[in-house]
Image (cartoon, rainbow, N blue to C red):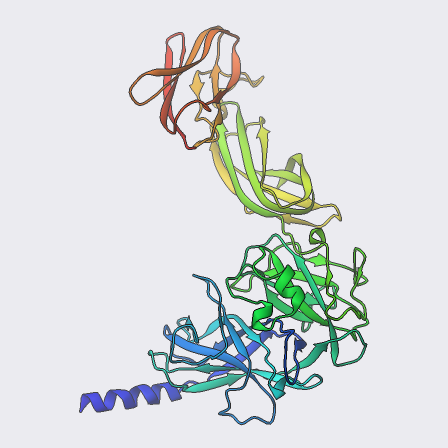
Length: 485
């Protein structure tokens, strides 16, 4: 009896939830042709599906319908399934029964899921230029079932346009570029610099892992210049657009906005004019330096030494980065204590450092203010250190012997070793391997009182753990360091 009751209870429980889809990023235009569509383009939207069973794994596939379709129609078009733990997967035969033809997501504790969905238009009649389409997601029961149990649909529609050089409400042109954001991120284009309202287009950043090539009926420019090329993206934009493209932003898989969206107040991107374009499939490329390229802070740390605090940070990418202002706070307001020039626009990792020699007792916080050439700025998250300033006199000279941890550590092949001596005298600084064998003599001479630093280059040594030892008078101190090649 219990086996008969449980399915009924689960069915009843599922019916208690009113399933809805709220699309928060839905582009105004999608590529399409009624017939042989050999110029396909991926179309992405960001949505929240609610009213599902909490903490459950659902199978799904998403397709495209028109207003005359019934509530039980699945629709048309291919699917590119967005996956965070592996490559995206393209399916030309979406269903809930075979892996690779369906996607999966897990709901949160409220029974909701938020994420990106990607469609690929086919040559179905629903994709007739000038028509309007809606987006529908088909779901199973959240318990491993292979049948469609429910369907949720977008409340707003998107207009179909085709590649042509002629103007008009049903035509569009190709646009592509490259950005220093991770593969499987998303790019969204707006006709206003604020990024308000519905965007013109949205797509993912290559290399996502799906084959979007001429062999799969994609536009030639996408197949040649975008597919499988890191950082590349391509879209169709409307030819009838008096404002042009004025904002290009990059978003993460969870929808979070990357910093420093690229903007144009007049729709001109270098020599590329996106106002009422007419280049059709002869797609134009926005120069990569003008596309989304956030100042991405890869790391930010503080190293407390006798007599100073050394701040170190690294950027993964930079766009129009004028400078970093260094700010400090003990209590009350943040105070600017220095500035380091940025590197403008670059896709290469850059390392920076700054020394704060005005030491204050107690807990001290630091943050970075990254300033663009146009005056806009963003702050890093603050970091804090605890300082004992009693190790220096009123003139900033050391009052105690000390040996600092080398930096960087681990290192390859060079690192810096700092030490302090309060009085002049003989100083030796040696490096030993784990067998106790001396592998380098960095110092063995008379040194003046003060703070000192020595660079150690281990290019001729193998990877491994080493010890460095300083001797000054009766003071001896040893620390470990790690060489990784």
